[in-house]
Image (cartoon, rainbow, N blue to C red; front, side, top):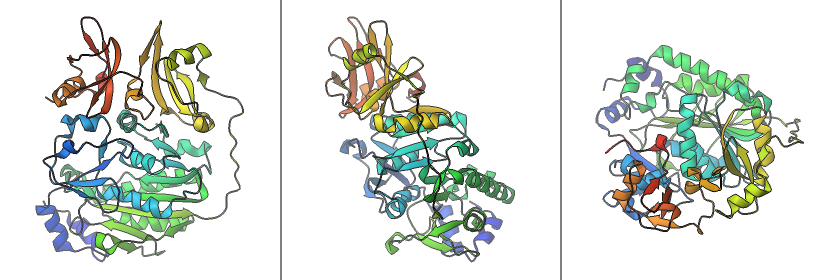
Length: 454
């Protein structure tokens, strides 16, 4: 692997950069495989029985794997028990540990959220907060919504908006994560194609894009709020120089983190304003190239935010609620509303926030899709099966690995159970719905999610 000389030259003088070791890591190093466990679901030991796991030191529930299994053919993965995430990116958990205010319920924005690694981490870190997971590119929103659904949480709203669309929600978020689009040099070892697409011109283009994104979204951050900025680029132009620009042009204040020296993460200081940034070099630690920094928005907010006085959502009728409650008994803290022909459940405390955000943003997913009513029948939604809502009263059918894979391929499933709807599980983890009829079993796994690999 021949690394671009202009990239290597730009790193000369950057703290922690060792040209020989850096190049050697890219020539001989194997990409690191890591996962992060869903804290709300169990992770069966059998999932990685022939693979050695060691903890990622800066993220509870993060594990390195000694080799890469076929995640596509692991039913536990599809059930949302873990997320395949690069270990360096998991350092976000430690940053949150040090900068997040947990004294009150937080409103968090993950601005560039697809495919969902940081959003699921944020939802796990802030179980009582509200996470808005936004993705600009429409074709990537479906993957984001799918991964949020698999995680099972009800405190994430998935939106599909450009950063400038957030102008209507000023001084709203306590914390914003911008994992910015970048030139991708930190992924060279993991994705050699990124090497062919890299150029100095693209680095400059990315820097301008990063500045535009930050300038557009900063009004939505509360005064005193925290912005966490990250890239998978090594280029100082996309990292330290962007921090200097934020401090000089946007009035941001750098936040220094405390590092465990055994982690071998390198703290750097920008040339103009001494902003603190944190670099991950693959020759120094188990992880790919990554950069992250935290900045505080200075001053005191004078903006007051008012919730809508009138409800804009369409709520389920008393009869519809009774119909739904005959299938699943929802706790009283949930409100049921309608979106097209589907019923969704959202916590009452999030209702006014959802309605306010819906006035300004395109919302792809909010709460948990419960299902739909067709004639006299309630048809449960797939999100309900994967959710953390109480499903103990519903009949379940446990499938072994091969039967579970057949189900995930949306093929015929041989199952014995009571007539009607059943929740299929694998290792005790819900995967979706089947309907047992007198002469067949109907597989209700979503067609767009089905496994195509044999």
